[in-house]
Image: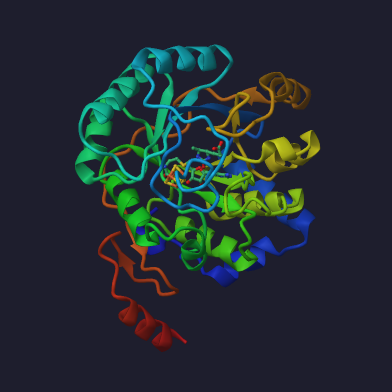
Length: 361
Ligand code: SAM
Ligand code: DTB
Ligand code: SF4
């Protein structure tokens, strides 16, 4: 689809979808899902925390931030052999994608990054999709990951721009968009989503989806996490989101990002089998499997596979969805409500944005 023909979503439009009567919403999302995906296939991904804890950032939800007193067991960067072994185990358990997560603010060139590049090469040889989430990366680092065979890079925008600063103070929303722009200068596919249940409003949820849906091209993968409230983090007291809010979020994501893999990510231990089934109906087509996410618990793999069997769902094969694309500069409408296309890092000044908003209203 050409840039000019693309729909630019507003927060209001997305909120109207999000607030529809639930059954109408799920019906619409399920219909969209069936036009673009096999409804009986769900991708199984596996997370490996290659470097745990001790992170310099202050993300209020994260048990791995050094400044919070959580009970996680930190570790140095894993060896290539350890990671390869875990990836092979995941593959034999039905996983077609492996996501390597590091508790880094950003990637630093040197021995550790070289080791991660080796991990990417090794897992790519296992014929699995490899995704990395390593924090902020430069254009040159993105190119090196591409050369090593990386299939996807995960970098979440987490919430709306407005709510982001309530959750993280050590970096800005624009920093996230900058890294996303660097990924888009390569053929690596983009995985970017966020978290619900951090105290944000429905407008913030719609605001986050607006940013993702208006990216051109849209992200190939969008994880929707329900907050896992970890003791010792500033969000430890947050009440779990209701399953119906999760279903609404998944369904709305499916409608505004029809071709994307929508990942039902953190928070599944709190969801019943029936609740997760509603999420699959509403368009979720991936889960993280294995008894641990990065540091927090996840449902038992046997329970997941039993659910798949009962529902007649089959795990999706690797590389089934998105062929690697040609590198292309990503465009995104400037943050705010105006439809001017710009590149991350080259967004127009805030005053200018306000001026355009005033003209538009
Ligand atoms: N340090 C890198 C970064 O922040 O991009 C990569 C790892 S970080 C743990 C990856 C993502 O996990 C975060 O962006 C956030 O969306 C999600 N996450 C972290 N802690 C979470 C929690 N307690 N509940 C739900 N999602 C969480
Ligand atoms: C994503 O959006 N969710 C995954 C993956 N990307 C890296 C991570 C969830 C982490 C949940 C908290 C933990 O286990 O530490
Ligand atoms: Fe660090 Fe990532 Fe956790 Fe933020 S989410 S504290 S950047 S590991």
